[in-house]
Length: 222
Image (cartoon, rainbow, N blue to C red; front, side, top):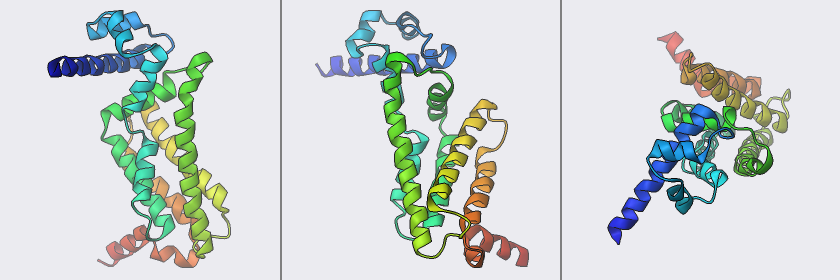
């Protein structure tokens, strides 16, 4: 019985791996269960044993990876104490670093953003993505609002706009990196971009206290 369960688990993972590969190559809407079954070396019946339909299969392909939004939320959650703008910046850089080093995460992100048309029944898959994006926005809004309450946010920025700007920058970096076939250093370019944006959030008299600014000052002295 244990061996049967183990084998069933292996078959399920093999089907998910094959679905990921087929979705990436052909697009989710154009892919068929026959193509996925052939890639996995199983029958359509084996797919239906584990998954109700292609939509559920796609949902499981997405669910088994930690998306960039998950990484961002996790990092921010574990850095509750400190300068809220530094926390937002650190979480953003952490997200980029994890994404750059995870091939599966990159493949699934590409499938989600470039290989699927969310029409008809497929639209329900967007629910998790909408929820994650809203959670990220609320987290960033909480941090920028806290920065304002502590007198750290520049008067040129409102918390809502600052949060939206930072979230849009991170999303744009990830999308462009994948669209351009990783033709630039995501972590290096992303760190510079996010640092510049977050530094623009800071009150001018507090800018010299920012981690990057202090590091540059020390390098100049040495």
